Length: 212
Image (cartoon, rainbow, N blue to C red; front, top):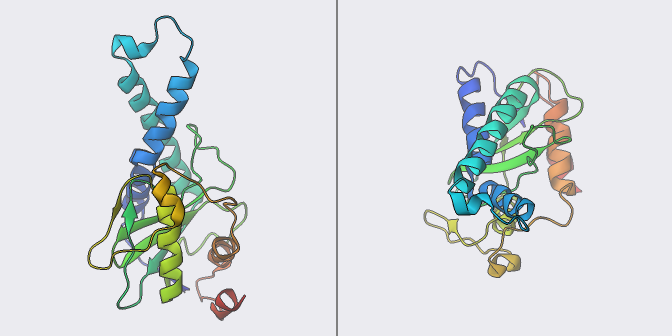
């Protein structure tokens, strides 16, 4: 894991990540199901008046602004770099624990595929070294496969890839937006610990994570 310094577009990157989290089909589905549950027994629900979509969009907009503020003020970001002959897949859902409309989730985190060669780990840990805010991490082939498996769990019906078709987790066949049984898996947790404790001078070794 290596510090990424003198990056001039940090705020732009954080706004893009916020938008991908909030505007993903997975997040919209969460708002839609919550909305329908609230008005399930209403005699004149907003669904009948054409207000359903505008209300869902307004909730997403509020969440977007809240997450943008939080990421700019208190996040750590690591660019995950795939090795040769591998690639990240992208889904209509991906690993994310950002769910509060007010952006007040406890220690939220997400792994967001951006390009076949790059994904991003973003987190808001409870304690961390302020600098560097950004870092890079060169993945192993097994770690790329792990990220793709996790992405397929959170996806519902769609997975996108460039050249290398991923092998999805068996839960992808259910056709619903899923979640990991424990969203504090050891691999993700230890990456976030390293991410939070990384100094400008870097850290000694990442091998301890891969060996455990």
